[in-house]
Image 1: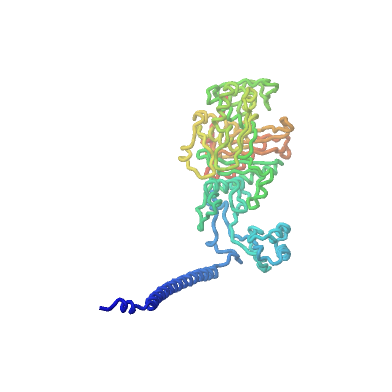
Image 2: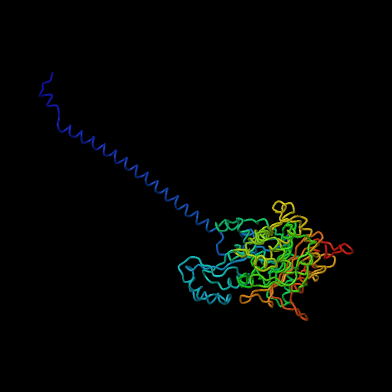
Length: 578
């Protein structure tokens, strides 16, 4: 057994220290290797990320290089353009409005080298450019500016040949109206962005198309066309005759409508002066108002149709009754007289065909103020008409009806309404007594029956047809007759207010008619504003101008409407006494 010294002597203190140092070195080397591996992994990941990043950039550059440039040098193919509006057609499929391809001129100011030179070059093609405004656009810091919308192909070609840097073209659609002003007040027009702002164009936008456009949503395929109730042939006849009458009678305006009394469809409607929707700036002129629906007028003696119907339907009068039309009526400081007074007792048919103011006032007095107001309201003459056309005026009436109001309204003064709703109310008197709101869209008789409201008895309607027929056969409407088509109607000559007083020298004339009157299908109403006496005549009443206008319209359009003439002894003998 070794001694303790030997054992202690065998242990080398330095050798122990060396062992400890060697173990520490091995630990540090392991850490270094681990850290090196981590750094290498990070480097590989970073390189991979940069590789992916630059690959994406390269791919996008290739993609942009393969895309066709935004600036185009010619009008794009039809399938590359956005069709933003449906075509408008008449009831027979004739085009009233359509989109055509065009281009618009734009600039990228940040790419313009010399704004002054660019403007000088553009002015050689577009001499009416707003130089100051264009210079301001080209000198701005923006990246896009419109310079001129909807260029012609010739203008585009000429500008392309100038080779101006930073100038380009974008394909667009432009609204085109093949008929020009023929149906302008019905069809309406669009603004520079192809959005409807008047007429049926505006109505279509209101059905959802406008919301889509405002949201920037469009479609890449043609929309289904929208068919209107208009017949372009009848529309042309109507406008042509209105224009001829304006010239013949030196009037300031004329308007008319052809209405299907069984469906409420507007077959033709025109108001002159009108405008060309291809140049809609004309619509801003004051005299371009759509007088048929957006203007209100005192309709004169045409209102006697409603007064007579009111008396008959209420039971206050019968066709066999006599009414005192002697002398005059003094009321509220005013004296009511007849234009061509008979100064005697008149039968109800005589009151109608002689257009007696006194007789009409007596009938209104029998019905009473409340009954009178209620009847006109029932016929839709005192409230805003409901139809697709946006331009519809609200009639005006006394805030409080008094007896003097009822008396004057009985012969067409004191209430101002639109000519279109006058025609609609007259249609209700002709079709058996059903009020049908007018429409500018196709509608069947069955569909019309679902929205129709009965306003008078069928017997009253029959009596009014007889009276209208009698007035054309023997009364003031004789010049409205058309051989073979049996027209019935009523004249209306209203004095206009000048300097706060009614003037007998300034008139607003109207004629409301229906045909064939024994079983009518259509109402035709015309108005003519401030007509002058025709050459060789001393007067300018409605029987001398408005009635012949209706005759000419019916004569030319009846065939288009499918109404066949009937000759011979088909008309019954009419008597003023019942």
